[in-house]
Length: 487
Ligand SMILES: [Mg+2]
Image 1 (tube, rainbow, N blue to C red):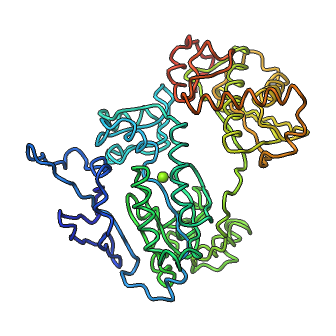
Image 2 (spheres, helix red, strand yellow; image 1 turned 90 degrees about the vertical axis):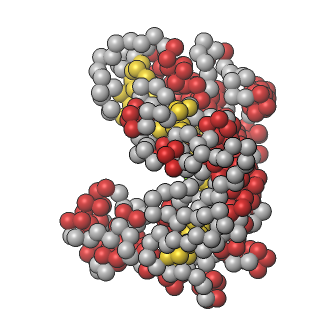
Image 3 (cartoon, helix red, strand yellow; image 1 turned 30 degrees about the horizontal axis):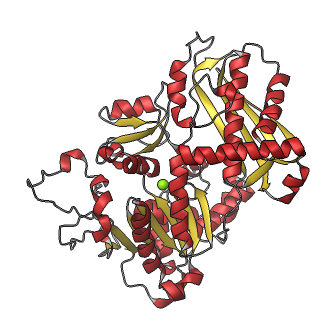
């Protein structure tokens, strides 16, 4: 991927250009693997050179391998380099390119394509024009009119995510997934077998590409905080290594927002005291930070600013909640329609719970009104459930108790929290009917897994075109109603 300031590489793979002072790009042994993704990898249109007719030219990506302070790393440092953060590059967009190779090299936006759609993933070609994740789709399309916009296909993303996790599993069982496209790995135990963290990072990147066709950036450091910062700096298609003895050289020049937990409010508070870089924060007494930001946040910042983070990599940390939300293209005020949307969300939550082998006890209904007021209502069940009907019935009851009448609703969501692994107590709790229904929903999951998201759905949803990937198409089919309030 070519990005400004990034080291470039010629056909012999020999070019080295530092991206920043005190860092060096080194030869990457797997650059020859670029093959399929190399073209997608994003030469922006204007930088493409025409191919000689009839001759296949292998384009080599400038694969970034950066070691803070330059190579080599002394053995004591290598010992402390045990935490990796692996983050797939433009994950959804990259999967869409694998599904449809004609999209390769084109600016691509994945997300809601309706009037209120939001970009969930932008290819690097689209980012070159200023498109960003979480940006309103309409704005992204104005910035990059030639971009192709596609609705998300979470079933396929989950499938790829599982394949990537299998590759990670070949390296270490100590994997903490943070999202479909990123995970921490503790490779300290794998080093004797697989070499140092740099070698492991290289081989991870090569194997993910071989097994899935996806590009992944790896950050390697002595702890989670620094490893995640490293992968951010290494993007895209990089391996960015922060040896522990050079961590502060890397960390202190970074802007204060690089510190985990520093949001806009904290940033403003820090800026008021002239604290703009991580180094500024590090040199501020802990008591001052605690007064400024509160005891917990201040203490945490004081630690992080010195590169200290002792959070362990917790394998397969259970999700805190599983949820599904719908934002409507136009506000809903029809109680029947609203109930149907609640059912749609409940069905998805049930499916995701079952896919993850989880069950939950607390059902939460969330509503956002046309004036952006947001309301949640929760109820905790006597025993954990992963059953669509049960989730729906609770959510519907929570909705009914609000006695909304015809209030325009902008967003509805259902989530399940208080999660636990699905196991024996759940089975024991189910009566005859419960067992039969549980079997039915699992059969439906199996059919979906085999034939696609739209193969099976509840009868009450059949009037629409179900499937989250098609929510925008479905929105378009709805009769538009005049909104009482248009935010
Ligand atoms: Mg990512």
